[in-house]
Length: 99
Image (cartoon, rainbow, N blue to C red):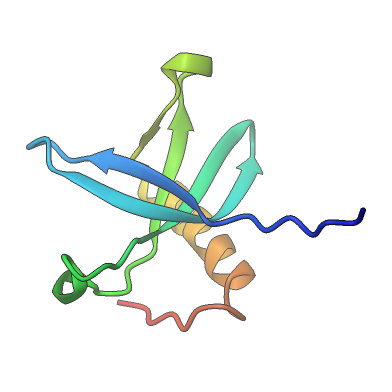
């Protein structure tokens, strides 16, 4: 029997410094120079509809295995390079506006 499997979006929960939790969908992954990067968009629901600014969030993976976490990219050049790659790869799916 040939059953087609459907997979939903990859959703992650991230907390800010105040402990407030936010849901994000992983829209792309990229490995470059030994680092793993993620492109995320906020999950929009009826509770946070007014918070949607359409922002693409780019984070780097740190740690390993059970200790893996996502962190902000502090180096501006690194961030700009990775963000540009994601924007190019995702251009068919999203309309980006440079700020």
